[in-house]
Image (cartoon, rainbow, N blue to C red; front, side):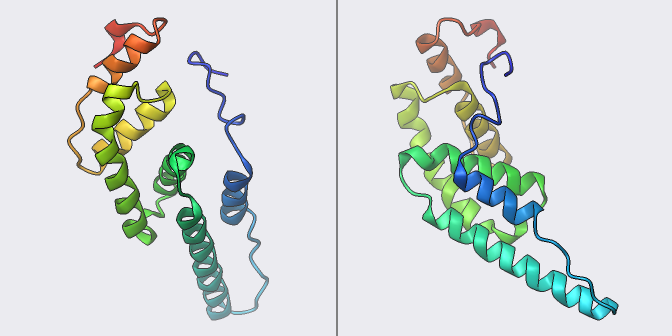
Length: 148
């Protein structure tokens, strides 16, 4: 557990575990030629991309917002984001439209706000840092001198 009180392993739910299993547990089949290896790897990649698209599509609702952001972050860190450009753009556009209303409501926990802020900024959205000040008002333990 880190200083903010967030433990990455405690946040994993079954969908994220499925996501990790898709990416990390697909064994390569033993083949004899390079063409067979390439064909097998391409098939497995297409299959994994299809499963991940299905998981992203099935995530809907306010509670799944953080899970979607975590999945987008993981996809980007694995450099697989070019396979999911449309899905990522749609999800981040929805989060961008919610950003202003979140500023008035208090916005969520620090991890969610920081992840949303970083992903939106990386995609070129103009996001004001006022959300962090709003978060500081609701959580008095947060040091406002460290913000923005």
